[in-house]
Length: 140
Image (cartoon, rainbow, N blue to C red; front, side):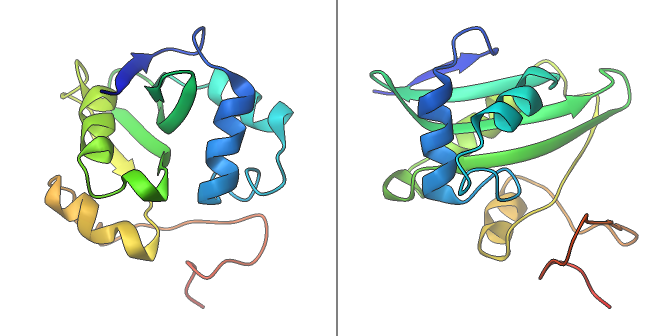
């Protein structure tokens, strides 16, 4: 049975970095094993949810928000062996819990779009992004 925890005070930072290394998350910082930047990003977040299997983090996500109007969801990750088993759905429920009044936004990987549709997310007609470098997610 997995344990879902909210907050950053419980995080084992090395385990979190390992998760994002395996899932290529946090805009490439996971593959770089950049603990300092990942930790700073998570500490500066409005809400963080981690999923634990014993002492190991097997899933995580975070939200940046003003707590009144908007909540932007980032870095949703579940170890590949545990995907399609309800872990990601529970992460999202925990992340949005008590903030249902917010307008939630996120960007998705190509393979995860169907997952978000099942949770009630829809494409935004005017969504735009500016990346610090090139990305396969940007149109010309």
